[in-house]
Image (cartoon, rainbow over all chains, first blue to last red; front, side, top):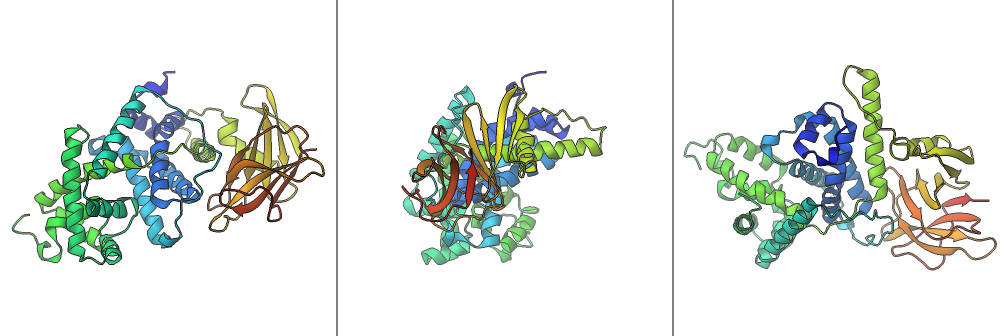
Length: 190
Length: 228
């Protein structure tokens, strides 16, 4: 049998469609770190983040046939699923005030230290995205953080910041436009 | 935007694209905007461009290692579903990897919950493992290769600002705290490595403590597992 870890995501998705569970294992190991990191960044609670990631990956297994490589990478597809589920969870539970990050000192982590070339590349890309975000004016970064990582709608953000909804949407547009230019310079977006 | 947009007057075409890509439109607005994009190539292109940026945003999140229990639960569930699908539709090719520690481990452990101390084969390596059912609470202590792991079930989520802490009891001495702090999923399951040397340990306990842990137990144990 070939070493599945050498196979590209898109080809693994085809294997998943054929019912190959080992291909799913590889996809999980490649992307679960980013998925859990996003979920935890969004909800700040480990148990909730784990539930969200579990739902997203099980859904990936069940609906692998719906993946369309023409519409983006597997990683983006997975992270989009996590993002959407986190937002759904927020809006279903309306527990934003209950979010906290005080359980981040738990002692049950895997000592995973993947140093493949692809991981090194991803760390570099992550650094570029963080730098680009930090380079935004504060009021623009704030609406991006609240919308994308906080899962708040533009009307909720407008209420929080006592701003007209149009101002919030305008800041979102300016922020994404600037980020796009910065990330395009680094080759992260086209 | 197109000059013939039927939805043009119902939303802010100029800035909805960014909010949409961020998932920040209200559900009804998002639905309306999706309909609008069917006919507005400008908004469609703008969303496509902004979506690339939004797709890159997760990389800005501080990277966290994947909790061990999460991997086990996800792969366990998927492998189980694969087996069930294989039985139901044998024509669909299913290649299953025997992974007792992942797919069947938790289920097997729970199945023997009332059996006390049980020896079983682990991972096909021939190494003997022991599973010890808790006498208080729903939990299993799994011992293998000098490593101990506590798998809990049906445990309520700790109160806000609290966490579960694992303790080692040696005879009549006060329980010793460990660095093992954990929470549980919404279904009440969780697992945690039990650190330290278990030599002379008579019981492994779990109490609910303030986040960050406590140097001594402040609440009655919700899990008690007797080793001897």
